[in-house]
Length: 166
Image (cartoon, rainbow, N blue to C red; front, side, top):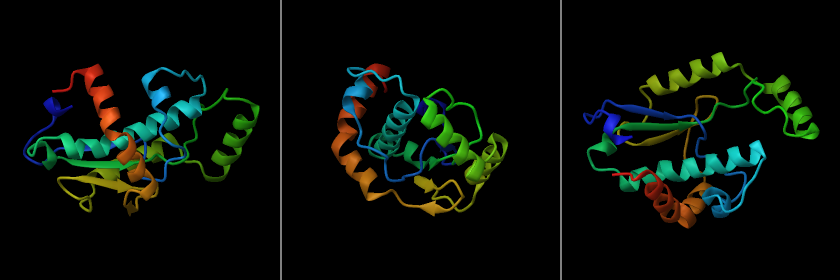
């Protein structure tokens, strides 16, 4: 990633998978490493989200001083009206339809919210900010920081070995 970013402090990166919230479960190293397989979309998305959050914080630790000048913001799209989640089982399909009917947003509205977040002058420049699905700033949860303490070094090693990160 660092090869594609400006190093003058003007670059902004938007992570749209999570926003520093309390993780729905503990990080599963077996699933992340492929030693345990799962066909459940929800489980896989949640584990990817937790790993993504851990790596966002890991970037703070591992980026060069010049790259730390980039503004990074982590947010979550909220409950999208999409058919991505369909086919995960009858109960989940019913739950998802009720949830999106009550509080879902369209992909277009979500995109406009995320673009507004990325362009906001309220972000912490040269660091990582968290914004909830409604555009409110927040801090990383204690539960997320605990997952970072437990798994950052392991996950960083796994992913940098796979990708040969410089």
